[in-house]
Picture 1 (cartoon, one colour):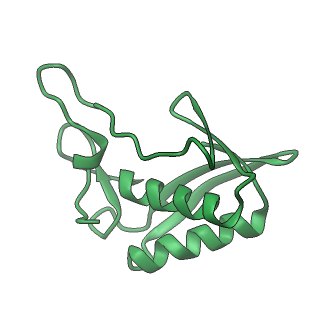
Picture 2 (cartoon, helix red, strand yellow):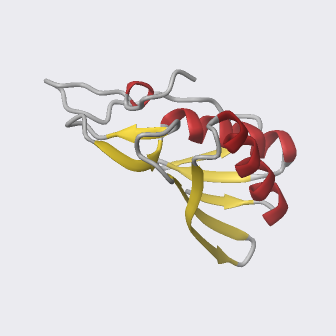
Length: 120
């Protein structure tokens, strides 16, 4: 995702989600482009809290929908002027909402909210 905010906001948001998900969340990719950051959230242990599963059911080392939602909630709480581009949409504090989406197929649907092993 692409985020326009301050680095300290990203660090605080990461610390916040790590409190909720037992320290299992990491940023595996962070690149700056001027005032923008490209961020990828992953997990240290794919069997730990906040891990996502693929449409085949296999555990993958990416952060789940709940991690991303809490992360963005915190960013907008800390920086109401932040701007986020993710999944082809632009979000700001006034239009941010958690959106579930089918990442499976028509015959075997799997929604982001179901593609994890956490109960958050």
